[in-house]
Length: 63
Length: 390
Ligand SMILES: Cc1cc2nc3c(=O)[nH]c(=O)nc-3n(C[C@H](O)[C@H](O)[C@H](O)COP(=O)(O)OP(=O)(O)OC[C@H]3O[C@@H](n4cnc5c(N)ncnc54)[C@H](O)[C@@H]3O)c2cc1C
Ligand code: SF4
Image (spheres, each protein chain N blue to C red):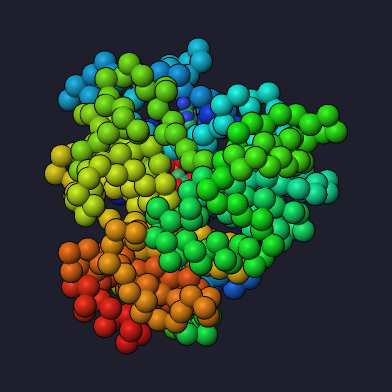
């Protein structure tokens, strides 16, 4: 599983971080950092939830 | 949409039909008052990704006029939907008809007065802005009105906002935040008139609208957007034997009747957290409640109780406002990071010594990271300390 964020539309509202902090982090500079580009399978449910809940539809999973 | 997706995810393989009164493929509403007006996105950019690839039968442009719950399905559930001359038999029904924007009485005949709820509303307003209108009047300083004001200012339009209360959003977010939001809009050139209502709107001889305001002044606007709240779309449910009272009244699991669940803006349910019947008009709630309603249909009465923490955001000018949980004038509050003067602030809210909300203005980290503590309801003091340490 590969996580891809469209940084042109992401607006750092950190919804993904609230759901999967292992994978997504919005730092104090207000930028989103993807901590794990290829998170382990056990995080799939959380990452899929982040995909659904991202208000900007900015996250995709490439299998 | 999210209920349908969740039904499929949770293993429902039977027939699934989605009916919508609008002809458009499902789209996302939040950009309608933001990116669509500023021109950053067009109608093709706001399709709902959750609708892609779903194994469902689409019946779009098909308003449902009535429901007959005749118990013809398994276990005495089920019934028929009436949509024009077509009838659709169902075993389970998800009611997710949202809400309609309230209009000002007696303004239906005015072509330049509108609301903002649908893609067509937004495209009409965007086209008006594109055509070079000079003045926009916004009635109501709620989230939608303020977002429209901000987007129109960004396009160089003169904007007047009238609001009958003393602060924008004050009732929802409290006076400190309301005063801050008012200052920010004025700093961006919005002519915000508080404690002011509209006495009358008439078509102007020169085109546009002449608005008589309660403070006695008269202004000319090329276009008027009315943002005075919404009404849950339940007319079609009259006679269906459901409890309709400012929405479809459900139990704690979002069930409205055997085999019937409700979700999104239209659903009203007893929130344990809030201790009262609640209806929530936010995007994240549409997802959370849609998924919970789907689980309720599949699991029956044993389904989990629906008691989420509300979460929303609103973008206005360079402010990103986010709230997880509850805020408001009657709660304890404490600034935990930054300050209103810096345009970057996080505020914690407590009730009875318990943390119940975290608001951020340009402070997304605090809202995201405190979500768990708000959900579990740590003490206000611990919550404030934890947020300060972030
Ligand atoms: C301009 C705008 C900006 C917003 N911005 C934000 C934001 O920044 N943050 C946030 O958290 N929330 C925001 N929201 C709120 C959010 O979009 C709504 O809470 C969400 O759309 C609710 O989803 P829903 O599915 O309950 O209802 P809706 O999205 O309203 O969908 C209901 C659907 O039911 C259909 N329908 C109604 N009656 C019938 C019938 N009788 N037969 C068939 N179909 C019917 C309607 O056509 C509609 O398509 C915004 C809303 C608007 C309008
Ligand atoms: S939820 Fe979406 S928009 Fe928000 S920070 Fe994550 S990727 Fe960006």
